[in-house]
Image 1 (cartoon, rainbow, N blue to C red):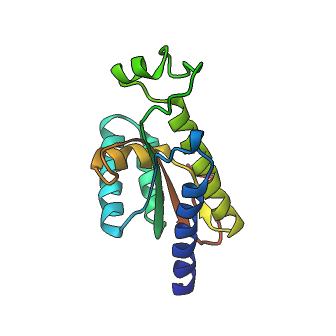
Image 2: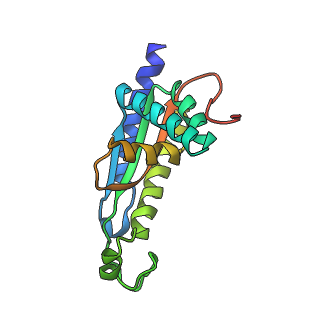
Amino acid sequence: MKHERDALLTVAKLMCVAARTAPKAKGIDNIVTKIMSEKEKSRLIQRMKKIGLKENKPSFVRDAENLKVAPYVVLIGTRIKPVNLTHCNFCGYEGCEKATLHNAICAFNTLDLGIAVGSAVSIAADNRADNRVMYSLGINAIELGILPKEVKVAIGIPLCALGKNPFFDRK
């Protein structure tokens, strides 16, 4: 129904706002959000099926099939830029300078991503939109270049409004 699809677009936009305004380490915003276009979604479905079959990852094929019923997909990713906190070493290196030399992923960037995703899906839940957090969408969207090249970690959240959430109780 058109009104349900319109409502889902509003939810997707509100999810992007929630991700943007979520708390971040030192107030540094490395979060990137995007609502995928139909063309991008089609490319993502094709790639996920291809990778799923090639690398024996049936979850990628299953998730690709799930996307077919999702009118909208919200992508939330993070750029990787150390936030220069002292006495941290969460990335495995002593200090942000060494971490940068080794292309380490700043733990605080990924923590901020998790908080942003949690804020976004709370909006979906509050509006009773069917959704699920999927890493498979994020990694494939990055590899397809759907997100800016600075984004190194991302999550995809498909949305739909059906009688039963198709993203759970899957085969």
